[in-house]
Length: 173
Image (cartoon, rainbow, N blue to C red):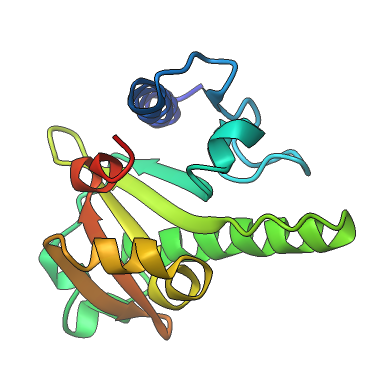
């Protein structure tokens, strides 16, 4: 396994651990996906037990090791094919679409919100939400996010709202 994959897995485990501490649970309830989104029954990089999903209804995609610059949020770079946020958004949408197909197939009523949690080496951790999906599925959460400092940008015709990870999880403490 290459170093970047190892760093990515460590980041996923770090996020899972932060969430376990937030909800005061162990690895049986929140864990890193063994297949990291490859399994037909796993969506995203962090697996949540049903009891956690009731409180924290998210499909979590994690990305680590990318230098996210301000120009990726504004101006011509926001839709540039080399923009890592664009690539991340495509992955988040893929996970979300796979989940919605699975939920329909098995008559699952749960509505999970896709999120992207990302950081770089020695950088803060951020969470991006697709505005239209978040607003539609959880209006209360959407309104809470808007109270934090946030960046809003449009990538691939989707409005993304990005907030600090610690602000985000403070909602659930």
